[in-house]
Image 1 (cartoon, helix red, strand yellow):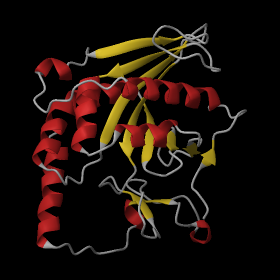
Image 2 (spheres, helix red, strand yellow):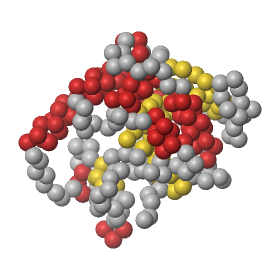
Image 3 (cartoon, rainbow, N blue to C red):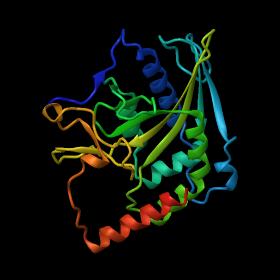
Length: 248
């Protein structure tokens, strides 16, 4: 079956970035510590981050690699480690999906944010690059998000598994911040239409002609011509999720 996105192979402009992401994730997840659900407030401190240097020749704590020198940052590592446990994510499977021999796939950005999106080969996880302001917002909402996930095991909100940053060495000194999320579209069911809904009508139609729309096209609010009828339990869960989102 046709897979969405462009496979990142050697020669791709983001090939080294992909290697850096995979090296960093493998390092971060591989050094798993004890997990407790009762986290101290200090674990949520935006300053709670860990920098690790990844020199090309390797170091005492990092492997030798073929990418450029870079630094790796983990934001609130204890919180995200615990979230992965709450979401019943096995560390070995997580690393295999993100850092295995299969390359990531890059999606063309469906929005105006300028973010890049990457999918794992098994479609289970999505990586999204973020602006500094977006990282700050996610860290600000993290305590409430964590409490929500603990309270509602089957929550429908986006599942966040890690928040990281890669800083390239040398004259460039470029920082790439990114979040790892569960891919909502990872399903055994056939997906015929995809929508990016923001609750707005301004400019909220796809720019593709009808003849070019396929199952990978990102449609918008005014393209939605369905009426949804939910079971009472689903509707109540949907309202709970909305209440959480509207807090912010």
